Image 1 (cartoon, rainbow, N blue to C red):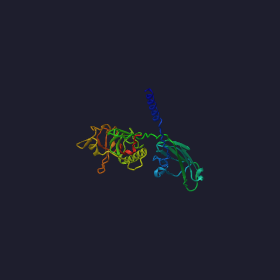
Image 2 (tube, rainbow, N blue to C red):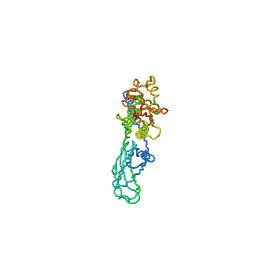
Image 3 (cartoon, rainbow, N blue to C red):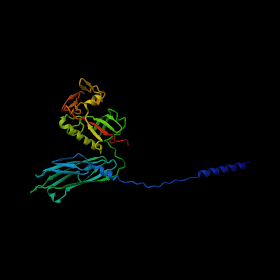
Image 4 (tube, rainbow, N blue to C red):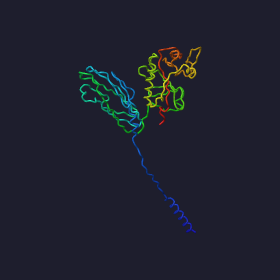
Length: 337
């Protein structure tokens, strides 16, 4: 009896060991293709619209890849002209190493003009960074005879530099229902807005402050302007700035307008009492009424220019500020990483 029990135990042990020793290995092999996003980098490094030239004119080519300028006559010794420009790296994936080289196309004219370029020679342009620069040309030798036009060329060569992570974009924010509620504050860098409304594709916001008539940026110190003379100029330049800030490609992705007299009572809770509109008791008074007077959309039929004053009343005016409504595509607002 004892022998039989031992034999059974040995058999069970052998079976257990046999199951434990059965293993298998699976192997998967493959090839990963990685590469440079050349076309995006080439498009992303470009001039911005922030160009000025003292004593001349300029134009930007398609995609802001070329900048052409022409000076007025430099006909006195030491007369000069200065071109100010900006180069923007709109890529989040690549930094850029750039070099700049400027010279007259014809070397014969090098004795007549001096060229000072800033930044000198080379500079770095991190992802989403803007670099400003200047080109100063001075007449250093007098010219006799007929006036001459000197062909002049600058080349900026940008080389992509690898990154280990996408650059975070400070000019955008994570768009969701919570931070797009009516009255919520949205900031694109230093430009802040109050949300008016949003739908599936767009957000409408009013600028927090009037836009300064000289800098085309919002300012707590923004002064009034004469409506007929400046409002269109301010709106156009502010729109151009916002498009550059958000790297908008489509013409209709950002639209600017002014509040209308009709919308104040229909949408924003203002009250019309015997033809006098007041917003002081509106539920939106905290952001609708500011310490600066600002324009409503002009009544083109009667040519009456009206504005909301610092007391929340709609008054006739031709010296208010410009406080635009911005309707922007949600595709220009950064989504969560």
